[in-house]
Amino acid sequence: MKKVKYLWQVVIVLLGAWLLRSCGLIWNPFSRYDALKAVINRHVGHAHATRGMNMYTIAALKSKVTEKDIPLLIQMLNERDHVTQMTAAQVLATLGPQGKQVLLKVLGSTPDYRLRTSIQDALLDANSGTE
Image (cartoon, rainbow, N blue to C red; front, side, top):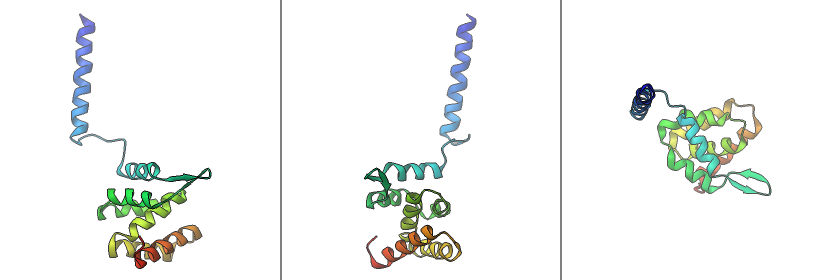
């Protein structure tokens, strides 16, 4: 009898936690940043034993972000993973004047050569219409 009572208590606690989480009232271990990073990782190209960004990577991330995600994309520019940096730069360049301003600001302040070239390429692509 005690086992049944204990089992019902566990069920009630788990059901309550599920309801609170689904309503957004308790902490979600997967952040928006992690979700966007997962989009990039799911859509990278693989060739010759390397990972690489392609148009599908950019399109997938662009379809998931809005202007509210600009701070997260800025954070992605500081990732060690170059594919993430390039993809974030390309998507920022397509988010209009606000995204381009962010890229120009980062371009002027970063000492990282790879990040600078990624930003320059993204801005050139956006201005030439080959996004």
